[in-house]
Length: 539
Image 1: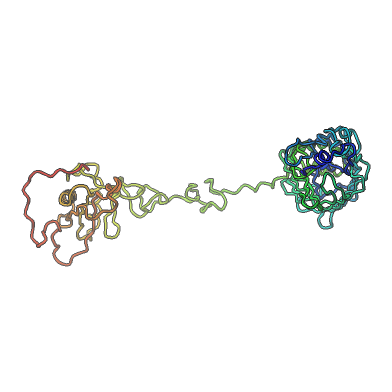
Image 2: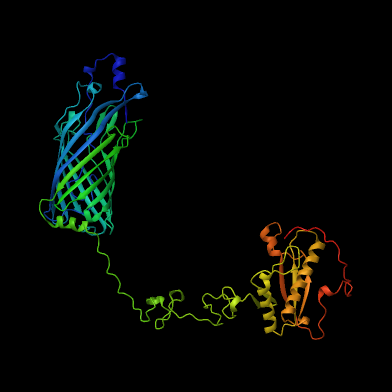
């Protein structure tokens, strides 16, 4: 808001307030509503009323501090020349030929008040209960952009507002001259009822200077939206930003941009009456910008015209598309349509409507069998046997477990080794299988090598006792020399403590002795005398 200087100049010059010449006054009312029932309060939408449809009713608005002067430097208090205003706009509008509409707005200031106007050269407060400038409005749809009343899509129209100097200029209720404002409207209505509208144009006003602020021609603008909340009940939410940019300004002064943000609710009743109420706030960036404002309106369509019918259709949400016909399920397996890969044979949903198969006949269906071509038997897991051949290995699903620091095989591992024996007996082409023993990194190399040899030898003896020919199996301990994982973690050490079964390549001649049966010189090692074992960590 523009700082005022007049009181300071009067004090310095010793002039009396009564001798000051008053500035030319102007209409401070920024709120200029529309009577069309689907216009967004102060933002116009493009669609005109239907032919000979009439809409009429009152708009009540209350604004707080619509005209306030702020002293320069902040030493003096603000002076509210117009501290509050209650205004009634009596409005009516008629549609013409489905292409245009014509309306009239008679503003009446029911009550207003403010501080003494002596700072602008007159005594007393602003006059109350006065007439404003009579305003005529018109709108014409642009060919090719005329959106139907209940339709969706783009719309555009040209508008023209003309105000006549019927208002009390001294009471800041009129401009004192004829003013006019051509404009353009562009909007879009979505299929769900949401409306977005954009207004712009030119406002021809008389050139004046008030308290050092240049007033004159302006460029009005507006952006509004309507969003259905309860469309079946006709309740919507409204929002709008409305204002104008001054095209002239005094040298060194800030440009005047009076603007307001408004929000509200609207109810399209079934009686043809549209109720709207809400409020807003000014931006504080102009001489005439209210601090707060409130509004309410009752717009009535007096006859059940096409306009009324259009509002009733707007309240009804779009009919949903008819549901598709129920898909056919000839095999009765509840898998229907394209999702059934076997439409003539029943099958479970998990198998896309096809019957489950079990190629290896182990009782685990192929879609759940991780080894669909190898029967798991009674000891399998996920359709895989506890032991099976993969390339040059006999892979086991569980580790072989031993007693702590011993080569005694725990009974829980007997089924696994029995499965290893089965694989070897069912595959006589396996010339020899090397049982490998591995440990983690705890204790010394010598201790781990000895423990891994003894454990590998225990597994070899178990296989021989289970029915594997002794010449087809041998053992070797590797200690901690071949880790699979990091020995820094418990999980890693658990992986490193293991027994592996490696299938040796076939031999054309006599089978060579097992690795742990010979020393580095090719001789059989001497048997060590039993003695005390070195201490080792528990595992």
